[in-house]
Image 1: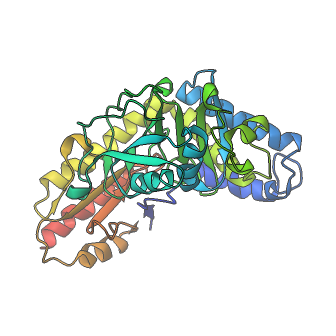
Image 2 (image 1 turned 60 degrees about the vertical axis):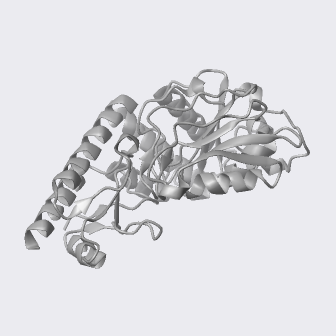
Length: 359
C-alpha cells in the first residue's frame, strides 16, 4: 500500500532525496566516509554549503545584497534573534498576530523591548488574515508569519511597511519555496526547513546586508547574525546532514522546473482539495476563502455529532496518514507541501467521497 504523509511537519520528502540521503549516509561523494562523519571544514562540506546557498539564491532570485545563513534552533530561536539584532534599545516592533507562532514571536520580543500586536484574528480562532491596522511610525520592524500551519491561513499580499525603518520580517517556515516571492520586499526571511525544503535541524535565514551588525545591545555570540555571516554559517559545527537534505531538495525543485513550476503544482493540488471540501456534504472549511492556505488545509465535519476518529481510521486504512487537525481547531488537516504528489491529493479526495457515500 502506498503511504501518503499529510503531516504538518516534519513533512514528506521526495523519494529521490531520501535515496540520496541513504547513499550519502554510507559514502558521501566517493569519499568512503559517511557525510555524518566528515569535518565541516573539509572541502566537500564547504562546497556543499556554498552550493545550497547558491541554489536558494537562484531559485528565489535573491538580490546580491542579501546574505544566506544556515542556522540551528528552528524558527523559534529566530523569535529571539530578530529582536536581539533589529530592535532598537528600549524600542518597539509591530507584530501581526495570525496564529500561535506569531503570538509567540511577539512574546519573545517583549523580553527585550515591546512587541506590539497591532492586528490579530485571535478572537475568530485565526480564521482570517487581518487587513486593516495602524502601524507605529517608530517601530523597528513589522513581523508577519506568511503561512499559518495550524489554522490554514496564508498571506496572498504582503503588508507594506509604513514605519521609519521600513523593515518587513517574515517567518516563512511553512511556505518557503512553495511560490514565487519578491525577496527585496523583506529585510529578513527565516524558515525552519522541516516543512518544505528538508528535515528538522536547520533554519534558513535570508537577511539584508544593512541589517547586520547594528548591535543596539550586547548580543550573545550565537544570537548575533554578524557571527554567522563572518563565518559563512560555520562558527560552530553546523547541521551538515540537514543541509545536505535541503540541497538535494533544492536540486529536486530545480529539476521540476523551479519555483514557478512548484507554485503551479501547489495551486492545482490545493484547488482539488478545496473543491472537494466545497462539494462534499459532510465536510466544510472554516477559513476565510480569500486567506486560505495552499500548504495547510484544515476542514471539519458539517455535522459535529460525527466522531472525527471514524474518518481518521477510514483514511489510515487507505494509507492516508497524519490527517488529524491541531487540538486548537479539531477536525482534520491536510498539509500539501511541495513533496506531496498530486496522487496523494487524489487519494484523499477519493477517500472523502467514499466516506460520504458510506453515510
